[in-house]
Structures are given as C-alpha cells and as structure tokens.
Image 1: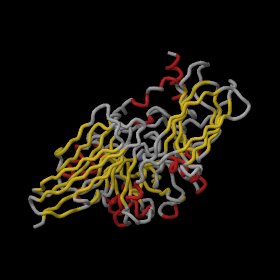
Image 2: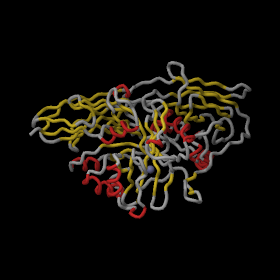
Image 3: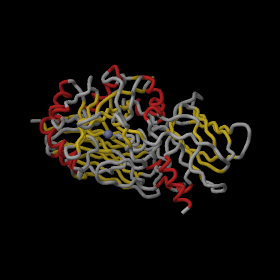
Image 4: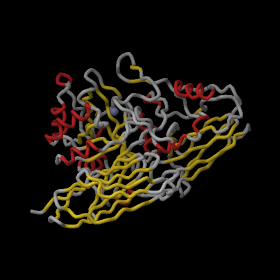
Length: 500
Ligand SMILES: [Zn+2]
C-alpha cells in the first residue's frame, strides 16, 4: 500500500526523477499493448485558456525537508570529453522514509511545460529519462540508488550503484560511455519524426538539443499539431527558417495535421509552410497534394490495423501515390505489421517509420527511425527526409539492423529474371543492457520465408541470417528483428522486379 501510494504520488506530481522503490525489477517488464487512440499515460493535459498550448503539471521545485547531499554526475566519451546523455535515478533502498522524487537542479524542456514522463522503451520501462548536457547536479537523501545511463541505441548503457551518505562535499559520479555500433559509417542516421514540443523562439532549442543529443537522435522533427480549430505545439517558423543545427544534430519543424479520429492523422515533413485549410479541414487529399507540390514528405501517423482512422487515411492516399511512409512503430501502441504487409501485397511501395509522439509516447526516441543517406552524403534535414521518402528506413525501439538483397540495401529496387536465386543477408545488433534476441524473421510478399529463433539464454549482441531465395514473381522483402523484451525493429522493403 505504501508503495502504491508512493508510485501514485510520482505519477500525479510528475516530478523530476522516479525514485519509486517498486520498480527495481521492472526493466524487463514487457511493453503493454494499448488499443485505441493514444492518451497520455501519466497525466491529463489541460489546455491553456487561449487554446494555444497544452500544459501538464508545472515542473515542481522540490523543497527538501530531509537532509540530502549534492550529487554531481558527469558523462564523458572515450576521449574524456563531456557528452550529452540520458539518465535516470532509481532508488533501491528503503532504509529511510518514503520519498517520491529528487530535487533536480536543472530543467528539462521547461519551454514545453512538459513534466517528465516515463519511458516506454523496454530497456527503460518505468524510468523517467532526464537529458543532461554532460554534467548534471541534483540532491538525494541518504540511501542506495542506481543511476541508469544511456545515449540512444549505439552506445552501451550503464547502471551504476551509489550509496549516498550525508556530507558537505558533493558526491561525484564520473561515467564514461562506450560506442558499440556506428551506423553513421554505413550512412545510416537516426531521427524521431514525431515529436511535439512548442518552440516560441530559437531560445527554446537549447534543451531540445540536449534531448536530441542525449538520445542520439540526429534529426528531431518538431510537429505543430492541429485540429480544426487550433494549432498546438506551435513552431516559431516552418521550413528552413525553423531549422536549427548543432554538429550532427538537427531540429526541424513539421506538422501533424489534419487530425481527425475517424480519418487518421497526417504527418507532413520538410514543407516550407504549414499546409492547412480550416474551411476544408477534412480534405486530406488536398493537403497531401499541396505537400507533394512542395516536395514535402507525407506519412500516416501511428498506423495500426484496428485503428480505423489511420487506415482511412491510408486507403485514401495510397492509391493516389500520396503517402510516403507509414508510422508503424510508436510506443506504447504495440506492433502489428500485418496490415502494412497487406498494403505492400496490393502493390503500394511505401516505407516505415517509428516515432515517439512525445509527450504521448514517453521519451524522445522511445521509437525512432533510421534513414540511409549512403556513405559520404552529408546529413541535412533534406537529405534525411529524402531518404525517408524513398523508403530507405527502418523503425526500431531497440535492435539495429542491416538488411540486403544481393548486397543492395533497404529501399532498393532490383531486377531479376524469373527463377533467379537472390542472396538475402539480415543482420541485427543490440545495445540492450541484457542482450536478448528472440528471433529474426524475413518476409517475402507477406510470407515468412526464414525465421531464426534464439535460446532464452542467448546473450548475442549481433546475429546474422544469410540464405538464398528463388524469385519467381515480383517480390518485396522485409526483415523484422525481435528481442525477448519485445523491442523490435522492422525494415522498409527491398523490392525485386522481374525482368521482362
Ligand atoms: Zn502526434
């Protein structure tokens, strides 16, 4: 009961860190499937009176009643340079009174009025991620804590146990992050194409960059979100004037509009302006045509088989060639590729994305998209979005993948004569704290043509499936990698056409 109360306090107050003592073993809990339209898992949003933006509980400043100690966490890369990262603190001792949160002396996206939400990602389930710019100060009462540290899907995550005793000097915790994989070298760059954070001016970018870098998301798409009456999460400018860059990291505006319960949610990326006509709000085709004319990229948000809205949008736009991607992965909505496969079987060539839908989806990058620019192609929002448009993508909330047919990467269109044997290579990699592949599956025209299971005891970080497949008709191939903790990655297709 005590624990339940404590957890509820955390959820209601939506405060800095989760120090809930009930969640020590929760990292391996599966992600729950939730049917229907997304609702905020932990807070009821309230609209500001003028309707301009959504407000969650304001970020509270905790007034420490108990004695506590300053903690300073630094995170560096292998060269010793401080580097942004994502961190959560979990309390694992119960030796002092119930405390639901820590006094975080650093803001988190304060411009957005968002309090922290619990990550939905399998490796981080129930933990509240805080993004820090290499150094973070906070206060903790005495006790034992685990500091969870991560930086996206290519760095090895850490857990560090600290015992806090009272003292006048800050307790320093210096952590170092090791890169396990480097997909940039193969031309793959990560992004979250579905994030809602309002930006009233360029001053709002700094902490969003912390989050982007702390989650290792190279392109974060900040979507103004509409309904017939209003725009939520407004952006200070659309198109290039609304773009911001720091090194290999970009913030770029976009829109999720129109949005209706029965006809779905449209995402438009990389358009120079907001494309919106309130008088014809339900005319999705007109919006998609305008987006196409503006060379923007068009997608169907949080696509799910039983969600009639997203299917209506797909049915309207796919026959007209007016959709470029289906957002197939977004937490906590679950994963079901069957309807997507049905569209591919009807001959539509359309790629996949994953996006967090923050603040509905927990943390930035909980689900994400990797896009293949190709070796040597410079990363810009335009090159990244162009790769999304071409279906050179995979969506993931855990595994990283490399998938090739006859050496050609995801999104390729190949030509073969009837009866040709093509070479299929499917590789999965994981930075999970406890690596735990469940199986690797390759589909051709919707049929599972090869499945490689793993023993529950498997601790492989990398796994490869290689085989030959005889092509007798026009064929699409998709690769799905699953982890036992239910994290999943799905490729966009590789297409093989038949030579006449
Ligand atoms: Zn959204």
